[in-house]
Length: 155
Length: 155
Image (cartoon, rainbow over all chains, first blue to last red; front, side, top):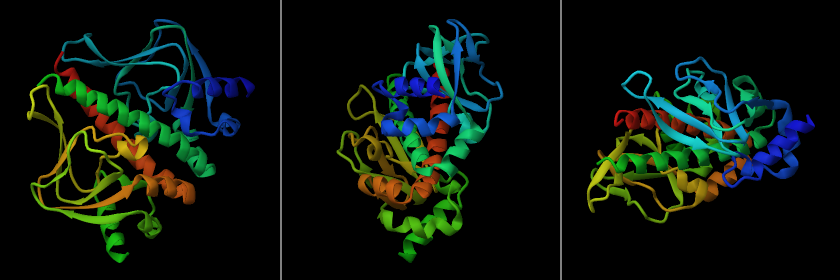
């Protein structure tokens, strides 16, 4: 439990943290919804197309996110994320398959939340859930903006 | 007031509605946070770079969203959105300037929520706010997925 608080604290202290809207004193209330995990450098967290049921919040290290191109085995990197960022969030919303491959660029610490826990958080602690989601929304819309900028360079 | 309920209802009945997680009986509680607006075909809702303080939920008609390329006056269309979709949501989260230009492709009806009202909704009705945000998150992450797919075709 204390370990998770430490990890969430660590997440929160980064610039682009998903938890930036969550009051520091509220982190403890989040613990029961999250789990900790370590991923070794080079390890693949998941492959595009994998079934999935959790999102990962990066505590330390960097995670590279890649999308398959039309050439089998050839990927394009669509994001490199660090401390405080979330990866793989779509599946806790729609329960679909992984849209991208995620790979650890360093030894990585993550805290994960499952689809069930996420839904439980919203029902049991809506205010806290709303604060976490506000951080996620800001993150997603910032990425979308960057992605649009990248697309615009092709035209 | 009744007009807004009707508009929100109409939003909700579309396939990709932001309000899909909001119970039908809860729509009335949302009304005081939203305002209605009509936009004539061809009218520009906002230009890239404009200051901004509201997000728009489309009730009817289509809105084209464009990003400026390196050639002045030349845009790339990054999305065409219809009934139930949200446009311009980033600014109610970060208060920044418009990242894209939005233009009505038809006579369009929208309901808008200001940054202040959005924050008020989360504080006053966190459960409802969480449901609206869940719909927004699903929408953003779906768009991000599509944007990644589009990027992958260039490589």
